[in-house]
Image (cartoon, rainbow, N blue to C red; front, side, top):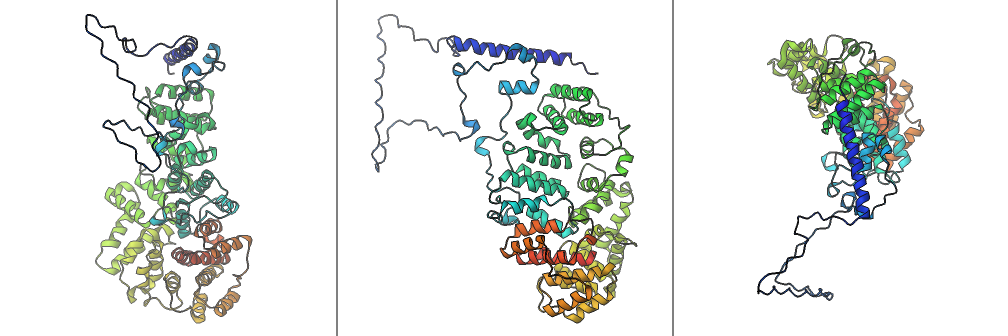
Length: 630
């Protein structure tokens, strides 16, 4: 056990010093103040000796007269210093003189003995009120990290919208999207630099977006949005949502500013442990270890959670003993345990990792401290959802190829991916791409991995059988121009044709009934889901006439015109040309574990609304993805 006698002694000295300081205040309040200047500086000059006369004192300067309006002030030969006024705010307020303060609220010595370190800091004024100087504080008129000039949505898109609708749409995002492109579209809308809707506090608006991003598995983006708000403006809800983002990125130190400012107003064992970690990184290692030892003894949290916090706090450099992590009896892998174990390089038991769910796999994909094999396993989830881009996937497998056999079974995939790029024979490159996909049903993340390799394949009649999968792969990265080069290769009414009919930016003529009937006749998907999605996508993009739509709807047994409260809201948002609200409502309608949860009617309203508010690229990619994955 750690010897805490020294710490208690130091604390006793601190309390004694505090009591002395308070007693000194009493004395100063009753007696004349003592000069702080060196001897002689505030004493009158001694009278001169001898016969020399004292130097005459200068005559007082007359007070300046007011300058008449419209006349410039006269200049003199002497210059005076210009003092710039301090900005308004907490930091610009001068402290009240000690002699004028009240002594009625000073604690007694017995009360001081019972104060803990946090309460003593509050009493002595040592607790910080803000972490940013007044002149550097940021306005909350617009919050976000992606400006309109950088690809974000217009900043005033929600300024005049009812707060209740925005609150309901953001609060309704509870899980991942069925669509990869829907996820990408929603992430862009959530991180855009936007003004809060009418009647909503900007902090609440930021909180709702941070929570939604966490639900999508976009913890890095959630952390960025939260940190765009000064810590002094955070409330309890934003603090808790931001803590989820910090844990999701294994960045516990990122929570230190708000932890120091808000202190004990942030309730819960997680915040208690974070505060102690932050004490260590602020140079108060003794205080941190004492608090964590107490939490361990009092069993305020699970022992493994406290031990992990002690290991993290020891990384600040002030720890005096090694922390042994005892995993015996730990049967559950939590976000806290996963985050800190990754941050401190502790190896998690295989039994816990084996049952890790999608949340942990998604985080592992983008965690640079983890082994490449573990990251590749997580990339299966992250790339399919839209968290990882095709370029990020290629970078990951390039590292796996460079590492060689040390990356496990993914080394073969990395070798096949390299051959897909560098093989001289087009047929050999296509074979390498197929090897990456695998002989069984292809995971969608593999299409993401091969997108740019597929775009390098020259269209050829000999490769027509591979066209549907190659096109689906290209469209995961939005490579519609490369995909359209296959337009003369794919037969009318095939799946390749359907993907191009949806993905092309402009279509000179509507899809004919015979083309659509050919696709429907060859569709062997469950419940002809692909045909229903194709019909919904074409109708939403306006690429089919009313007669053909009515006939196909009758054949497939779908009614795209039937509305719900949600469809009325998203259609109304599209009518007033509000892309941000359309994106949020589309996110509500695209939640689910797979495309079997999506209906053609929902897809139609989403594609139609996005297309009408100028987000046609996202609308086209979502529609094409629906057919590819349906």
